[in-house]
Image 1 (tube, rainbow, N blue to C red):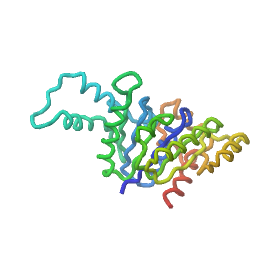
Image 2: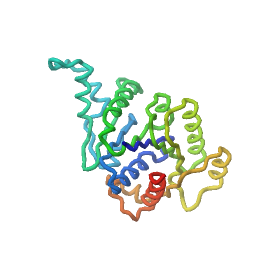
Image 3: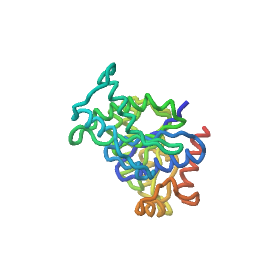
Image 4: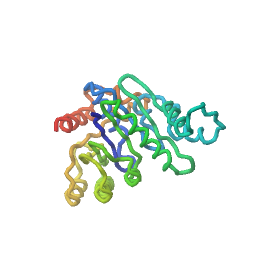
Amino acid sequence: MTISIAIAGKGGSGKTSTASLIIRYLIRKGLVPVLAVDADGNANLGESLGLTVDKTIGSIIAAFNDDKISIPSGLTKGAYLERKLNEAIVESKGLDLISMGRGEGTGCYCYPNTVLKKFIDELQDNYACLVLDNEAGMEHLSRHTTENIDELFIISDHSVKGVRTAARIIELINELKLSVGRQSVIINRVPQAMDNHVIQELEQLKIKPLATIPLDGEILKYDLEKISLLDLPDSSEAVKAVGQFMDAVLDK
């Protein structure tokens, strides 16, 4: 059975870097193949993983709609589109990546999101693990992209705003009655000690974080030098933190 993991949180909280470190963990543990899904219209998970994305779900849909296509005999338009979607899969050792990309119009992600969700449902049984890196905010929740998930990690940066966003995400999940096996808050980019304002906000909102991930200069260095986060050394403080909470989660 596929282990499904989704990442949510506000913009700038480090969702994509966290997703990348989770994928690194799964690969190192031999929980492969992994299907990584970049469900953000501003796709950048591929860059963090050192993979080149030439086609996205959005670009394939746009080309499909714009071009005068000749559909092979015996195929419906829908079936032909499904065949073309396979071109969006970026394959590498132990890891495949699908990126949603942009929608049909400015700010429109509804149809690509629907196609992506259906495509994931068809593919995921072929993989040991699914890691879904969502767009910032909460829109993906109302579109039910983040549903039928075993583990939802809600990422907050080390800020009061980040914690409040995490609380709103939890509230919306409960309102929508989404099918999520377990949801956990993770505080990312924490300096040497948690600030009292952040601690007080967590206590006031009755949030007990599953874990914290320390501020790690190596992640910034790898990003600037365009090096895959999969290549981070075991000595990385962020790698250690992710390894600890993933060990705990998978052991339950």
